[in-house]
Length: 171
Ligand code: SF4
Image (cartoon, rainbow, N blue to C red; front, side, top):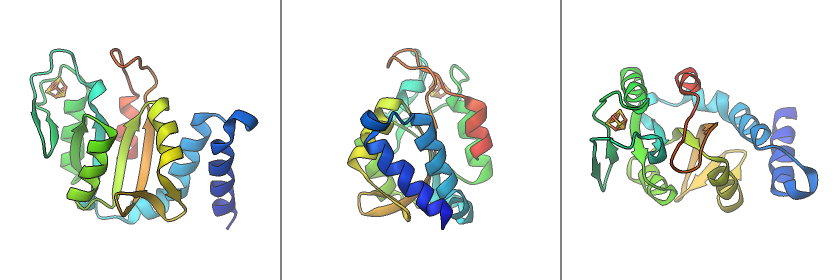
């Protein structure tokens, strides 16, 4: 009960963060904590690790599929290849997405129930204001998704980086 009250309080405070000065880190870790138990009960085949395409190397040789996003060749020019290997070994689905709209359609097309996702502060803020974040999951294209999220710690849309170890930990 306390967890639920904390979750709702942090969420609604975040929406008013201009007034209350709440940090993005706080909201992400509160959402992760709140969904973690239910997320861990999901079958891995129903969960995808979804990375943003801004993490791929400038010389990325991968092709793009309209259905599955960037088809990583595990060339080792960026960290996405290693994450793909780990995700698949563990039984998760894996995608690299070009946009938030594409991610939402993936969730629907692949019947996902959970997502381990990476996003920049701008997208996190946009998502929390535009998607329905409820205590039963984030509603995306008619589905309720349990998420575990990680913030990009460095980004300017060209030079982006994430704590790759943290993604491994969440898997
Ligand atoms: S590891 Fe995958 S995503 Fe990264 S540059 Fe190579 S093919 Fe592209």
